[in-house]
Image (cartoon, rainbow, N blue to C red):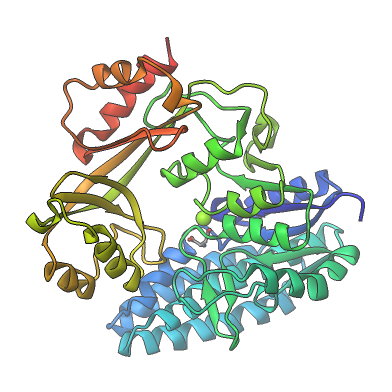
Length: 450
Ligand code: ASP
Ligand code: MG
C-alpha cells in the first residue's frame, strides 16, 4: 500500500445520521484512509456505564435501555437498507439487556467492560452500512480479534507485539480490499474476554491500531478544530495551534486538555506517525498537526485544566532522616495499582495526586485497602475538589524570570501543590475548583494575549 491513513471519529462525530455522513465525506476525501476507528454514538457509553454500575429498578433500567435503542434506531431509520444492520443492532441490544440485568444483581469490572463495549460494537455497524450506501467499499471489523490486552478490566494494558502480529494477519489484508470500520476503546484478553482501555480510550485505540498496521498518518476527528492555547469555553481569546510537538501535545493530553486521551501519543511517537486533530463538523477549518519536528518552540504553548483531582498527603515523623519511606509508600500504591500523577515532598511529608483515566470516570479514589496499609505507615489525608492547572511550553527548566510572571499573575490565589523544574515542558499546580477557571483566564491573558 502506498500511503496508509487511519481516521478516528469520536462520539460527537458519530452522534447521528448527519454526523456520520460528515465522517463519510471526510473519509471519501482522503483516498489514503483505509481504516476507520469509531467511538460509540455520543452519550451511549455514559448510559451503558450507568447500567453497568447496576440499576436495581426494572423500570429505570428499561428507560435507559430505550434511550440507547432510540439513538441507534434514529440512524437505522435514515438508512436505505437497514435490514441486516438492524438485526445486528438488536442482537447487541439484547446482550445489553441481559448484561444490565446481571449487573443489577452483581456489578463487576469484567461485566462492565463487556457491557460498555456494546456502544462501539453498535456504532460501527451503522457507520459501515452508511458508507456502503454512499458507494464506498466498506467492511466492519471486530477489533477484539486484533487488539490484545491484559485483563485489567476498566483500564486494560495493550500487548503491542501481539496486536501487531494479529493486525498483520487479519487486518492489513482486509484494508487492501476495503475501507475497514472498526471499534475504538475495546479489545480482548487472551481468553477472549472483552476489555476496555478506559474512558475516552478510543483515541488510544486508534493510535495503537495505526501503529499495528504501520500506518503513515493518523487523523483524530473530534468536535473542536484542533488543539487550542486553552479551552475556548474558559478563555474566549484562546487560539488554535497549527503545529505542536509530540512532547508538548503529550503534556497537554496528560494534563487534561480533553482533546486526546493521555496515552494516545505514545504509540504515535514510537512509530513516528504524524497525528492530525480536527473537527468533523468543520473540517474546512483545519486543525492541529502533532509531529516530531516543528517550526517553532515557544516558551509558553498552552494552558490545560484538569478538575476532579484527588490529593493524598502522607505525614510521618519517621521519614525524618530515614531512608526507604517513599519506597514503601510506592510499593503499597503499586500493589494496589494506584497510578500517581504529581508528587511533591518535604522532610516529613509527601503529597501526591491520583491518576484518573479508568472507565468509572469522576474523581479517583484511594482504594480503602491501600489506605489501610498506608495508615500503618503514616497519617493519611485525602482532599477533593481540587483542579490542576498546567502551563505547557518549551525549555522551561532553562529559562529565567517566568516563574515570577506566572506566580505574580496569581498572587491573589491560594495555590496548593506546585510542581516546577522536573519537566522542561511544564509547570503545574493545584488550586480549589471554585477559582480554577478564573486562574486560567488571568494566566491566559497575561501569557498569551499580550
Ligand atoms: N466511548 C468511550 C467513551 O465514551 C470511548 C471513547 O469515546 O473514546 O469513553
Ligand atoms: Mg470520546
